[in-house]
Image 1 (cartoon, helix red, strand yellow):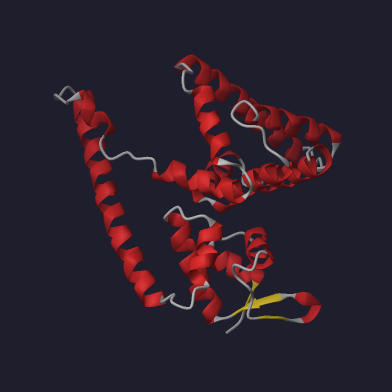
Image 2: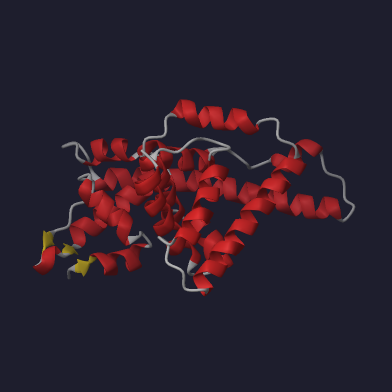
Length: 251
């Protein structure tokens, strides 16, 4: 059975835009192109996409994934066995986090808990995954390190104020959607300029990396859920508006 790009996107929870990007860089080519240059994917491509997603979950950069899966020594079974070991390790971490939550609940109810136990089970793997995605789009590790340095000494009040501004911006974007404004409209582009300026507090995106940030939003379930909880139409609208801004305002 052959799947269209839209069918594969729905099946795999990978956006159509990301699948197009994988094709463009040669990471995942379709089995063949049909009429009107439509992409079609078969079992071999589905299995390869599964491998790509596993490697992405483990934090590998796209360039490294491409190098590994294109190697003549690459073996799907060996790779899956390796992924399973990593997932087992992750499962242990999840159980540790659940245990930490239970201890914290008990502590808040009056039972004793060591302060150092509050952070048991947390690590930087998810943050590293986000960073690797941005690196794929041209953001250097030096820039990401500087971003961390920029906010290292932020106090709770500063984070709360920043969150308040972000929430307000999202509210304005939802209003724009309800008022049937186009992502390319001047009103929406003014809002996206605010979004860009907020992002620039942490790091200054180029055209490519700002579009890449939008790709991160639509490709990672954490961000998809975050935006869908605000408004189901917001994520698609935001990404389209960011692309317009990047293409016309950034270099």
